[in-house]
Image (cartoon, rainbow, N blue to C red; front, side, top):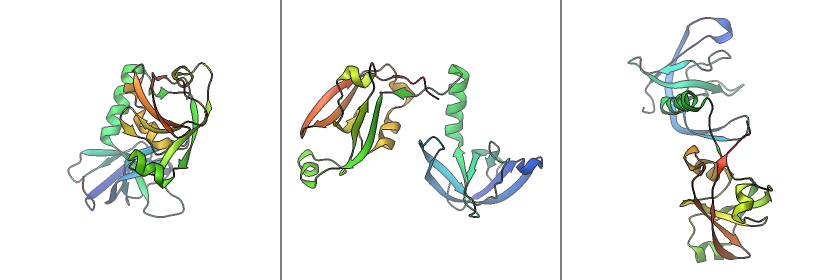
Length: 204
């Protein structure tokens, strides 16, 4: 996929069967937040007209190959439409066939993004001055078993830097379920490394 290439959307907007609209790929790698607040990465932006009823329909290129699944539009803006890449759609379909659902890893914490002092960022050689502070730890959760405490500031998870909730969500893929992972926190100014084993989320 490249910016500017032809994009053709097929769907049933407002009940009009097999409607075809055409446009171009406006951008690749966009981020879009879902209704439940989770950030979706790698989204395709196109100006091919979408309307209610297009969601779930294919986005194809000039060769007729499916490159995405039409997902969303922004109202009342025009020409701001989005599709999930076909690679993501394949992964979702595979997970649904195998498990009957999308499995998500769960730690059992609530957190908020905080800004670290520049002195601490330089001292710890961090790539960002943002981190995730734990504001709540659920009882009998992986976080509780690992020894996480309210006030801990998470700066890394399983080798990946954590600058906020979205970074932690990205790191918590379904492959982490049941795996022993490292988590790095700042506790009273000291760097502390813990081990944590995510479990499968039972929430929607």
